[in-house]
Image (cartoon, rainbow, N blue to C red; front, side):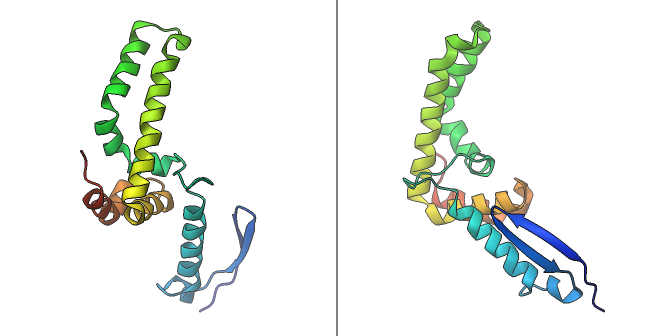
Length: 148
């Protein structure tokens, strides 16, 4: 049985016409190839021109445990500042310190375990940051870049 319905899937400037059929859902089918293409395209833009990771939600989610450990002092200082003074301007420097710490950490993680980080980030991006669907990639990432 063949069901054909015109659909458009837009990704950046690319538009893919899709014909839905029962045969497309198998692992080597067109849908799987399209998903792989989209993941590769997204991962290609996960770093800036200098090769540093862009702190997208998937990148920050993948790195959250590392951020909690490595940037704990900066985060605590920022939160204490915010608690002591409701004026946002008073804590800008503390906020910059948190940002600097996180960006430095992301750069280190990306340099030291690029393949594992990219796989984990790609999985989280594809599965809308659902940890449970990316445990295999998480395990490989945390093995390659253990928490300090």
